[in-house]
Image (cartoon, rainbow, N blue to C red):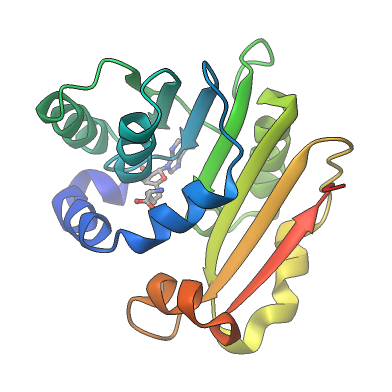
Length: 195
Ligand SMILES: C[S@@+](CC[C@H](N)C(=O)[O-])C[C@H]1O[C@@H](n2cnc3c(N)ncnc32)[C@H](O)[C@@H]1O
């Protein structure tokens, strides 16, 4: 049982209310016509829907292992009349190497996995499926006094020519992401592999 099967509506409502982080993430992605974009661990699909609306000739995929979350995401996409978005029950720690995406968003996903080996699997899985010219955005809350812990997230990243931006925001303040986007002292950004 995934906790998000039990509290999906609450998370969906919170995420829908707090939209500024989506604008920020979208502004950091380089999206071109016909790109394939993955929202890994999409939950209620808030980012995926935002991007699918903004880029109608791209295909947007939302993968999650909570069927309740996927139901909410699909129903919201239907309400918006979107035909370029696909929500599927897939484990993002073990994606097929044959799938390729031009952009991947992993928002509040690494926090879900406490086990360093599973985090490693997740990093490798996302890395494998990111196109050679693609961009990955990882965004995570972290307590303010733990900025040094970011290395536990970054360890093992070797992106070569692929771009990645890892964005951490202070998890101690309410509506942290909103604060973090607007107040740099609440956030840390790392660019990996960016030329
Ligand atoms: C904290 S929520 C974040 C949801 C969404 N990214 C957001 O910010 O609104 C983490 C999500 O990851 C999903 N998840 C957990 N393990 C997963 C896995 N192995 N594969 C895909 N999704 C997973 C959960 O079901 C949950 O919806």
